[in-house]
Length: 103
Image 1 (cartoon, one colour):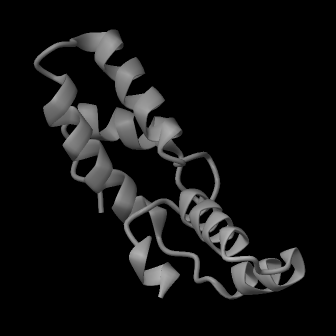
Image 2: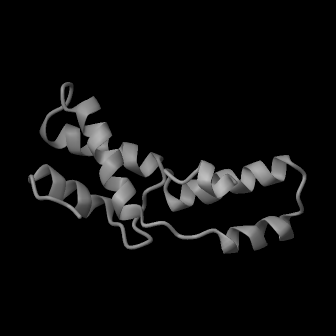
């Protein structure tokens, strides 16, 4: 099941990967789009916090302050987390850098 395989990805990246996989298998675009409409929208806020924590441990030794913030923001955007699906990456990073717990 492609949806299960890509469950840890952001919704955008998950749909992109599923589209690419099905296209490579030779499915028509109409069938692919119909399938993508059935893909569940997972809650990106939980995934973005997990990704943030992984990235923070990776970058906090090398970067401080605004450079750390910029690196985290860029990495999360590159992984498909955007200001859609009710996840504002900017707000999440600000809250987590201030030490607030994010649920």
